Amino acid sequence: LGGTMYLFCNVLKFQSAHFVGTRPLTLVEAVYLMSQILTTVGYGDITPAFPRGQVWVGINVIVALCLYGSMVMEVVGMVQ
Image 1: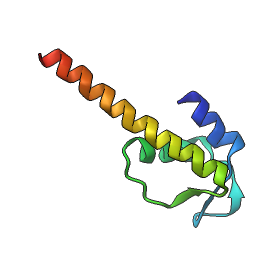
Image 2: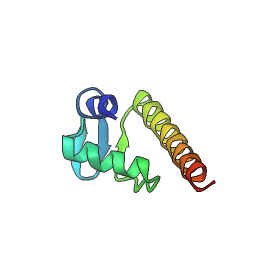
Image 3: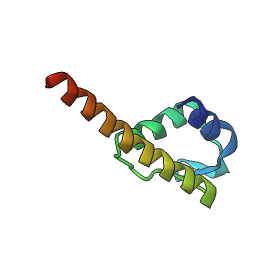
């Protein structure tokens, strides 16, 4: 998560109706976007401005889904 936060705040450019042009996210905006990704809500109000950002966000969605699968398997293991 730390590496993703660094990329969101310093490397990747995002666009939104809430700000003009494309720019990296502030820390608060990055936490907001990560919470959308991890909960798979995806409001769409902040989106990557370029393809490499879209790919990175897509990778984060896949990692989040794998994380959910891992947590479910741990709970199942505890119950058995």
